[in-house]
Length: 436
Image 1 (cartoon, helix red, strand yellow):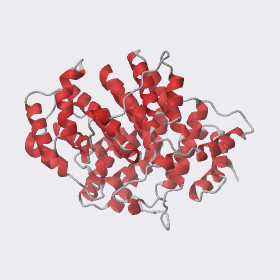
Image 2: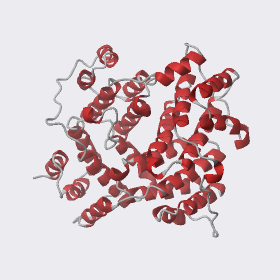
Image 3: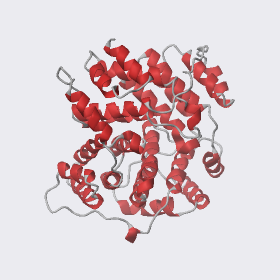
């Protein structure tokens, strides 16, 4: 049995040899790229997506986050994280028999009709008829679901991230069709445009564009907007937001205020809600990456952030200032030791020393030590989202996001048993481990 055949067999029916097969696969020429392509081609039609509705398992979705973190990780940590993410994907619920849809004509008109008619199986089949889905196809699909916040915005996130994953895998045709089909399938599932309709009523039926503007330099100027995003009821929030948009609120300031509010919600999140609350960062990153200036879409993000609870400031955990010079290694260890206040202090110190990239890299290095199946890949998704968001934020907002992320990661430490199994398989390679 060749390395590829063995890998395919483990993807189809995973056994205790899964990590050993992974280790051999990535030792092949272009083994990482080809191994992930094979995983996507095998798993997308095999997983029982319907059974998870209205939710979505994060095994395939989390792969983009893993590759987004790759530049921040040493090769061994990246391989460990990729191995456990693929293990999670392979162990998600399978159909009784893989989906074998006859490819459609590859027509956008048909695909849009199937999405509007809520026919996910037909949407998937039509997507398989596209010869070589490209970035504009995923972007067009993302536009079709921009108003749909079913399952807190997973449709737009999936279209964005799977399109980027296809690019990271060098635009494979067959794998691209699987990724495009999955995004189309989800797009055609039941919709939820409640927030969009409420925002449109207040902002006007036409597409109202926000001016980009320059971000405020001080947090105090955005404090009233942040308080509205965190504290008001949904109806009053949308009323106030519409008034601010009419008065000239810029996209730069709204994006910054939303990041600050999402960070505050993350600071207030209970341990059992860390991952779900971190999703706010993932959705904000998708909007930032899309470049949309549609005020209705950003109002949906405001409603999403507002959905999560806010505590009183005096009850919130505070950063513990470190006694020594800022040290990324100390930040990493504080997170892994579940010392939230210390981790927050190290993240704050690094940010104030103008080293946000070092803080982000240290946080990324903690992710491979937590099995994604334990936390539904929320850690990888959250840190990857922060990597996408930070360049678009002023330093004071980036600092708050890093502090909140450090707290969240420290408070959501879990099992690393699968990662250690992956390490043993990688250590047993009869050849040097592949480089980055």
